[in-house]
Amino acid sequence: MMTRSSRLLACAMLTVPGAGLAQDFTGAATLGYAYSSVSGSRPNVNGFSLDGAGTFAFQNGFSLDVDGSLLHANPDRGGNAGVFDAGGQLNYRFLSGPLVGAYLEYASLDSNGLLGRDINATSYGLTGGYEGSLLQATAFFGGTDASTILGASSDWTDYGLNVAYTPTQYTKFSGHWMRSDIDTIFAETKVTSIGVGADHDFGAGFTGFGAISHLNFDARNIDATSYGFGIGYDLSQIARVPAQISLELARTKIDPVGRDTDMDTIRLGVTIPLGARSGGAPLNSAANSAMSPRHNALSTFYDNLY
Figure 1 (tube, rainbow, N blue to C red):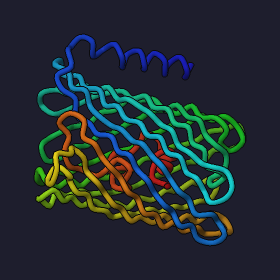
Figure 2 (figure 1 turned 180 degrees about the vertical axis):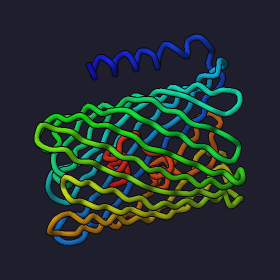
Figure 3 (figure 1 turned 45 degrees about the vertical axis):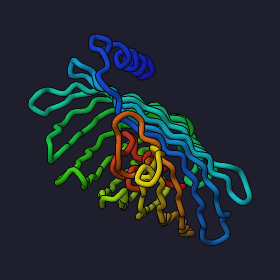
């Protein structure tokens, strides 16, 4: 039943906007590299990533948000880890500010044993909220069909809230809270994610961004806190190059049973605007993960791990 529902939702997301022609597209793609120094006896990690996100706006009040990321983590020794996720959200905006929508996402998470078993997950659900010039808020409720977590396939109930505040055209604050309740044949547990981030355009091509987020995974008694701060520069200020370069310093502290792990990460990024997008945090940053999270607490954490 859940698989059939996700297929119906995917078909609806593809066909409904056909009633109106695309008006514009706004988005970006970020090519990233990260080096993580890991405490204790764990190997250091080289990470390579490609992220993309954008919005198709239609003339009939509908819009389609699409995003995806591909991350390959290569430790100094041992097996590789990786993340692939992709998703879409169909929205309808009323003239007075309210909006409703539906989303569909897929994530493949290979943790190399860091948080237990690997996971393949399909998430789907409904959203609703309000978008104004100063305040934007969206809540969601849905489910996830996941395999091989806690030794068995599992059903998840996902729900959360994302709130953003834009006091000026140069500054944005945003945060999220979400929970995934997991039900397997062996146990019931939950994963909770909370985060807040900001970005600011200083002018002359310079932008700054930062965030802090926290994850709690009950089943494995794991707490993980991530934070990062970075700066970006628009190359079009000095050359005919439509790209932003960025540098971020980040740390993730993971407290599993028996041993703590600290990961200090340097992230480099090259962001290419697509359509009308300009400024904002790069897509491979901790700020983007906190400000524009997935609809699943665990995949949100993995997007920001390396």
